[in-house]
Image (spheres, rainbow, N blue to C red):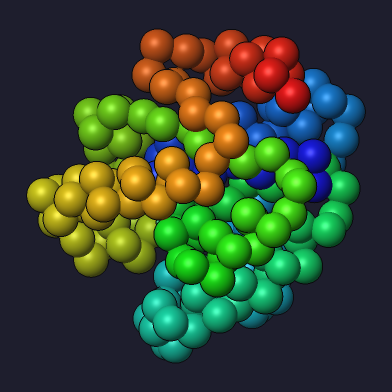
Length: 164
Ligand code: S3P
């Protein structure tokens, strides 16, 4: 991969990843999509039928493979918060970019989404507490942080391209 995007659910990893890949004339891969392909089930069904621990195993195997592919990788919100995944990210030379967004922005984007098991499980307070706990773990994994609230997706892409 040429760059990996991390950040909380709803931070824009997939949107920005697609645009960045287009700008760099390379492929885009979404880790959740790769997991769904591997499992042959949607994320919600994986969580419901097998539990989060099983999802995390699939996620780790998929990440370990995807990191060696060309292109831009958008991860899931939990990916860099798992030690084994963080170790994969740290060991690789691929730059890791954290898309940071405010609580308000995240809530607006994810609250009515029934495709995210953790959003379905957690109330607003618990979701924001999770976001806060994860911030230190995103910071640990990231080579670049972008505060995205005031930026349009294309502006975020331009910043990343300038930095890369
Ligand atoms: C998760 C985020 C999701 C997906 C899964 C778990 C998380 O990805 O990987 O539902 O732990 O934050 P998105 O960040 O793309 O929603």
